[in-house]
Length: 231
View 1 (cartoon, rainbow, N blue to C red):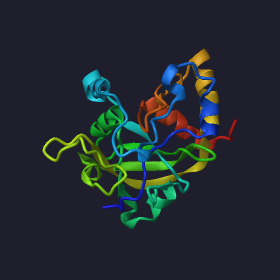
View 2: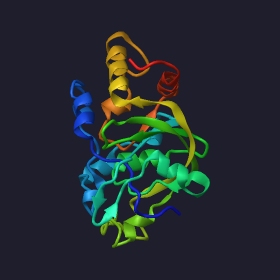
View 3: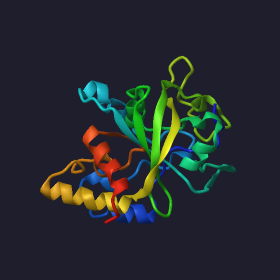
View 4: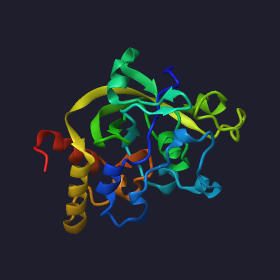
């Protein structure tokens, strides 16, 4: 089990927000709140009714998962956890704990062993995709919700009816080059106006989520960018 100090996902930095500013899709300019700043979830009760991938009838096999690669102290704990931190762990494997958004949690509950995800660096000077990770353990109870000393503690969650789940991920490889949010934004706007695989990418239509689904077409297109020059 990985140390509790690591963090998963965070709010957009100014640079990330500016990259999203031109996108008109409502919540696309707002990232999931900084979960580590509060001891309890900030979502409204009705958020629990957000449809999961399974209940909506849509099936995904690829994902994008956000985490913070730069140091940030919260309650005396450094919540930094970038892809290099994952790579340095035993077996290059870690639990993905601390998700406190119901839709993001539901997406994790739909993940299957062997599926791939982009490791996305968020809340940093240059947000974007740094590498590829693989799901190695499907959703199970996130123990941090019951730990009063943990920044993820949720007093409203009970052991006999836990609210939050996590998965285990394993480092697979770095992308051949870092793929920044600003570049992905350009393709999103191009594809939105002329047609293309990134026209409805969740990174821009559901940007607040720290765990997001990707279609196979979206995943393959983004992956192809590592063999091209940045635009």
